[in-house]
Image 1 (cartoon, rainbow, N blue to C red):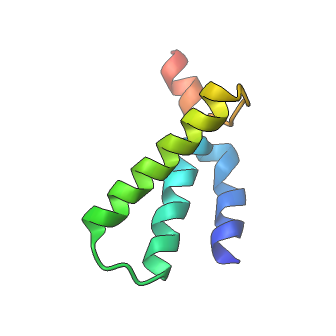
Image 2: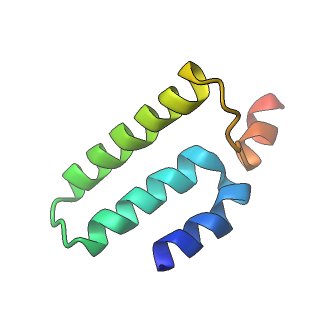
Length: 73
C-alpha cells in the first residue's frame, strides 16, 4: 500500500521514469533482495522496458514531471 501511495504522490512531480524506478527499488527492497547492483539493474530494465512499450510502441503519453521543463530549456 505504501508503494502505491508513494507512486501516486511522486508521479506528477518526478515523472514516469524516476517514479517508476523508485517504486521498483522500493518494492524489491521490501521483498528483501540483498544485492543493490541487482536491484538497480532490474529497476532500470523494468522502467525502460515499460517506457518503451507504452510510450514508444503504443504511443501512450506518460507524465514527464519536472524533467520536461528542465530538458526543454
